[in-house]
Length: 81
Length: 443
Image 1: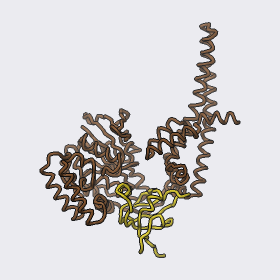
Image 2 (image 1 turned 90 degrees about the vertical axis):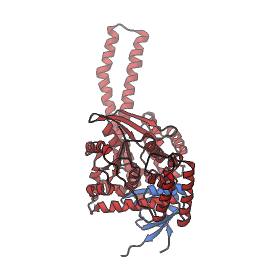
Image 3 (image 1 turned 45 degrees about the vertical axis):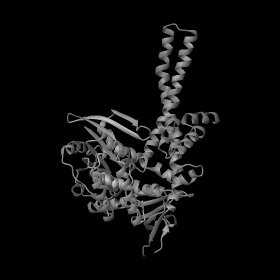
Image 4 (image 1 turned 180 degrees about the horizontal axis):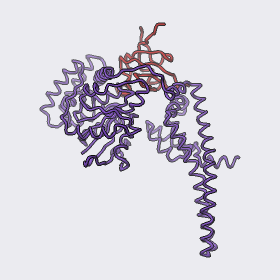
């Protein structure tokens, strides 16, 4: 399945993180939040008025800005049924 | 003896710190930064224990100023033992820091905190198995209720005398090759930080600048060459590669010791989910804000009445008696009765009730986690005025009193955001005393 930016996932959709298009700072910051390539993330909620995106990473919820989210590429996980 | 507390943000580290130290605490900024280091002294089993509370960080890689301070303090102050506070509801992410702490080779004890909440969420952790996998004592705790804290302290004292466990994170073979090369080179080098050579090598490959500045230039140069080589082979920064391996290991450990069962999610957790929906969320936020205001005015007004009545029945007559007893008159009489008497009364009656109530309500609100939701919901709106959603919290506090509100702006990321928020608060957010005056004038 093709890669897409995390920002294009709708609410309650899931994706596996492929890579982060960003420099060292952004990558390391995301790593410290548990957003590492290979990890499954779920979009819990998209904030109103261009607000942040609330993600579920493992057991915790993390809110990240749209700018950051746009630079995270994921392979969407489609659930059948 | 020196003890350091380390943990990720929001794991209950400061609660444990205060449980351990009582109130003999000194807060200082690390020289040249605004990162807080809290220190305290306590006596345990006849031993004087100095406790250093490191800034809450997700890792020790020195990619941000607080991480830099954390690793620097660990290297320079050489604590005898580290208590690593781990959030049981979020084991995998927390273990990422734990693995780095264990790699430092300093004796450590793990406080597995928020066990009560984990249980409520259906997360069971096999503590003994975790102990065996990490090779250090693990103590389940509930910091807010003081459960397990005594045992953590006891285990920490014991850990100082125990043998150091050589904990190793296994990395990808390409990285392991470079680690061995660098370790060989480090053996011949005298200038190096007091941690295992292997760990120095890993951190150098990951471009940790604090570690690099404590090593010989030649070593750092070699590390950079090796690191670039790995980067070329994998087409991603070496530190990302290392981080992923470490994360992988944290994940394996965490999955091995955790069993999750489906439970009915507690009301408060579900409330969080409901209130992050845009429409319901914003409505509930406005509802809550309205309740805060009414609570402040009704409760505050009630308190004001009580204070005024109490003051006028007990204090004013005493003053009047005093004045007539000593036969004071003229200027002194008017200073005492009109100046001091009315002055103190208005200070007590206007400021105390409203500010007290306001902080009571905000305190309750903080515990529910609704403030974080508010920051999330309003982030988009706040971005329009160049601020982060988090800036809403100081602004809300400003409705109570501007002074603590401006103090709390230090939690915001950048200097620009702090300045902007502080200016906005002082110009545009009326504090409760101002609001009282405004309402008085308008009403």
